[in-house]
Length: 158
Image (tube, rainbow, N blue to C red; front, side, top):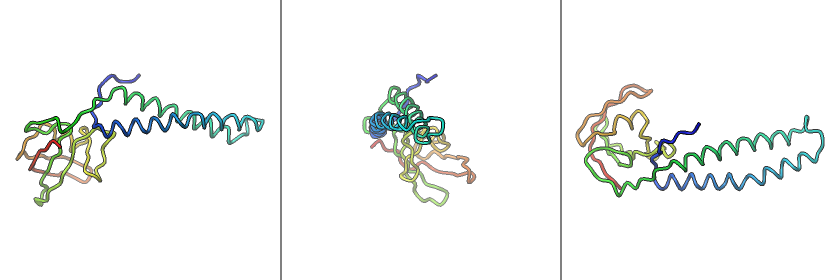
């Protein structure tokens, strides 16, 4: 059963989910046509095209259901409307690592996270360690590569 817990996300992440959902809904009639065409070839027990189309139909329907659930539970948050001196969802945080090298992350939802572009999920190990911290707080986080230490240098809501 689907959860009723709200999913915090940025407007950009919400729009991405909507676009993905639209694309999958547009694929539905294409799959139905492929199933009908494969049926026309006769014996369904040995019809690879039919089985592939039916399998894709099941995958698409499952993905649509999952996306509809996420969209219905979305709690869109605009970081620019936030403020405060503690790290919360949507904050862009500059940390200093062990070598006093600055690293910058934005706290986002799990479906928007992409560490390569500096977006980490609020429920990732580092995200959890950062939530509620203030400037100059020290953060220790255990990641697969070992323990990492950071100091919060700046918190922005942009």
